[in-house]
Length: 197
Length: 77
Image (tube, rainbow over all chains, first blue to last red; front, side, top):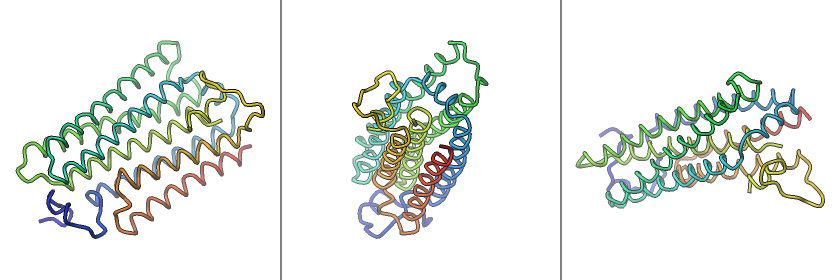
């Protein structure tokens, strides 16, 4: 068996420090976080050169929509974390239900984000209007792609749990780790784009 | 809480008798965001159960990100 792989029963009995998921996924997540950090640093630097314009643009964003999306992603992360726990204890039906709920919250996030973009663009705001909105569409667009990829990964996990006689818990944990990264990236984007004074 | 702090100009704005300066609000917003991120990493991602190099990798990243963002923010004041 691959050293990265662990069955549901192994996960219950193993109490030593362990990687929460495949090492490749963890390296990917850490690398992705560093790449986003560089984007965030560029944004804060450019914002500092023209604070008033950025603040004026920032005020046109709806903080209410941002809060709803934050709650949706945090709830989604909670469902996925509980789903991993349920899978470890061998409760596959419960794990499935929680995974579906987590994915549903993710789809809700995408729909609300699409509505937010539609409102912005239909109000006469072309995507290239001002530096702030270039950053806004870049950050939220990249994040949108991450959420979409996360939903595909969660679907693969769901498929593995339901079709395999001995489901791979490491695959489950890897998918969850990616999904939690999507959640924490949104928390940072929300603070930087919507809230910073 | 982050939302409440960041709402000084938003559609759900609050009123303080002595308004908090922007630089203090921004520091509060970033620090609360960093705490939330740390909680997600530690508990949802279960990094707390991982080997020490993994815990340090995430903690170093988060500390550096928060320091760089706040550093660049205050540099531009």
